[in-house]
Image 1 (tube, helix red, strand yellow):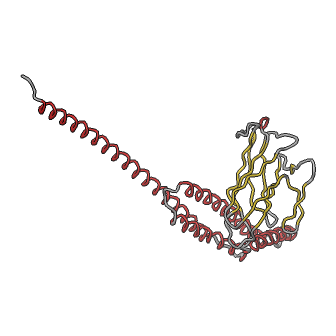
Image 2 (cartoon, rainbow, N blue to C red):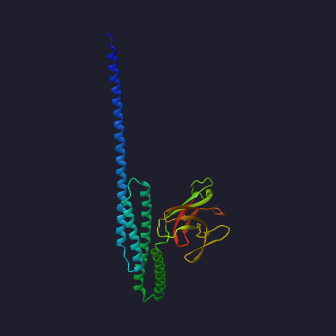
Image 3 (cartoon, one colour):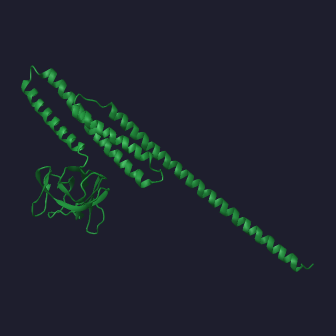
Length: 294
């Protein structure tokens, strides 16, 4: 039995239609899988954002629960609480898919937690001190005088800090980190291989701060707690006080957030132990970070 040309063409067309239908079906399945995966990822990111918001709300409640008779510390606590509220607002205005921003906010949350812990220590110290003064005033007058001196020093320190916080034009920093690098510019924690310490941080956005060249200084302390500097003593002035620094870098600050890294090579090399880096501008100390070298 012979097939006509029209029959052959019809069979070919059917085959083509079947093949195209299969391909279309596979494409549809693929698109569905991609859409489901994307939806699942977005859901997970939204959950992560919500968890971060919840942690911040809990931190906000923790700040609200802290109280002391010291008006200066109470004022500082109000400032830190306001920072938490502002961070919550920024998170709520940020899409969950902006993972870099979410990671940034997580780091800021860690910083705010650390600050709160320092205030808890201060408040506990003040409460303990007050109890000790009431109990021991009669039998340990000299001890009470020493404690009062320590208390006054603590009050002066917190008042100075509060004054700097109130100066909105002062440039502040965050996300301070230290990485030890070898001669190949790769990270290492082996003291014998370390060529330099790389300190990175961000000068945060401040629209009312003075714009222009700004110098950031670092002071590196070795495991023995002694400041490490180069062959020549480099001097800078911060808040009217002259200090020796280990390294520095100038940056053009125009009010926007700026990332900066400063390298320090110890002429005597590096040994095992914990190294501490304190970061300054000419206005104030920005913060500190540690690194352990094996």
